[in-house]
Every structure is written in C-alpha cells, then in structure tokens.
Length: 348
Image 1: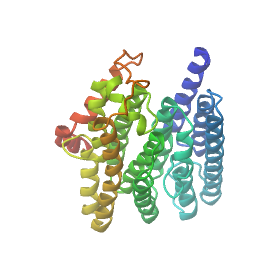
Image 2 (image 1 turned 30 degrees about the vertical axis):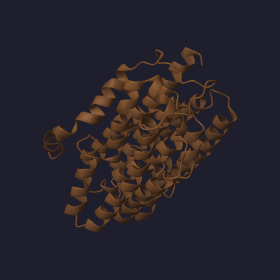
Image 3 (image 1 turned 60 degrees about the vertical axis):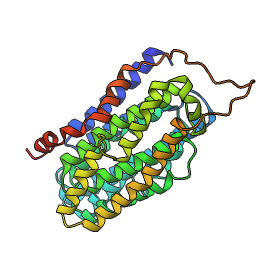
C-alpha cells in the first residue's frame, strides 16, 4: 500500500478514536466510531485475497448493524429524556440497547460469531489492530455510560469467558485461537466493569501488551497454524523460548503479569458477594489455559518431520523490528511484583 495512503488511514483511525474519547454527545461518539470503522476497511482488504475481502465484508456488515443499533438507542434516549449527553442514560431500554450494540462491536459472546471468522481472514498485523486498537472506543463508551443493568453485563461477561475457553479448544488456526482468547479476556473485563471501572481499564491495558507480544512473535516466525510452530525453533530460538511465557501470562498463571488482573477481578467479585460467579470465571480460565499449553507444547517440545528433501530452515536474520517485542514481552512477564503499587493507584 502507498505509504501516504497508509498514513492517512492510520491517522483517520486515531482521529476517530480520539473523537469518541473526547465526546460527551451521542452523535459525536457515533461519528468517531464510524470514522474508525471506515478507516480500517482498506487495511483489511489490501491483499485482495478472497478470504480478506470476505472478512472485510463480514466486519463491515457487523459494525454497520452495531452502529445502527447505537444510533437508534441514542435517538430513543434523546426522545425520552430530551438530552443527547452520554451521562443521561437513565432508562433501561436505550441503555440495554446501547450495551448490546457495543457488545456486538467489540465481539462479546453471544454476539461474537463474526470475530473468529474475520480475524482468520486477515494478516497478523491487521488482526492485531482489530484485536487491540478497535476495542478502545467502544470500551470508552461502556465506561462512560456505566450501564445500570448489572445482570446483563454479568451474563455477557460470563458467557464470553466460557465461549472464549470452549471455542479455542479444538482449533488449529492460530488467528482463530487468538480471537477466542480475545473474547475470553473481554469477558473478564466486562465482569468487573460495573463494580471497579479502573480495574477494567488496567485489564484492558495488560491485555493489549500481552496480545501485542503474541501477535508479533507469530509474525516473526511467519506462523499461522499450530503445525507450523514446530519449525519456529530453528527460525528464531530466543523468540520461541519466550513465547510460552507470554502464553502462560495470557492464561493467568503466577508469577507472570497476566495473573494480576485475574487475581484482582476474582477478589472484587468475591467482595461483591458473587463467589459462585468468580468460581465459574476461574474454571473457565482453565479452558483457555489448555489451548495456551497446547501451543506451548507445539512450539517448544515438538519438531517438524525432517527428511532429506525437506530440511529445517537455518537461523536466518529476520527483517522484523524486535525492540517493541522485547519491551512488551518484558512487561508481560515481569509486572506481577508491582501489584501493591497498582492496587494503591487503583484505590486513589
């Protein structure tokens, strides 16, 4: 893609997200979401591959449906209350409709069916943008409206953690596994959104760091399936030795950084007298942990069949920039000792 066009599209994505961040009016927030969606569409179909075009069309139809629901809910709320501000969401019907529209935009279960198929049709870089940056604006709106229907958020969150765990169990495609991992993590964030919004924001930031590390690691290895990971040790041995730590951090095992948000979320749910819900969420994390361990096993403990006509590739230098990967991997592994400081900041 022409670098000038790429710069314009990336600027438009940032501009749309910034508009949504800064807006207190529903029409401006909706406009920011639409600019954000339209800016990423050319990036998604730049390869002109039929799978990429199919994924782009699915994404466009899904986001257009969610945007129409959001606009209808905001008009209904303005008709009832006479206000267009985001803070005046006091009636259950428009608030529920807005929550469902934003859940469809970010891919919460049971409104998640588009997400694995869309990410599977994209390259790893665009899939990374879709899994991280595109979640910011809808999550900002969810944090601002602070939905009063606690049951709806808890149902969406628990369903997402369970679907994200079950859906990734039998997958062989890494991009689909990453999509189901994203759904599960979004469920963890939504579970505690009503009770501790700053903890949701912390979980979102740590999820961005861990997902960035994993996507870039797979991009360095040029891997899109679990079977292809068996060749990664000969391509990039240091990266291959660090990826299991990233995966276990995503799974929430101590003493890695991913344990911190899950620990704090379970603690907060228990404080809110939701111990059964916390138990189900913790059990659903075991489902996700299984396919993370499956990827780790394929990457570090297996080797591809080696015959004379199909030798392993030698350790050639990669053209990928590895400094961002090194920084995010360090954050993914080493942040747990800072938990007391993080708790102090969250309770300010």
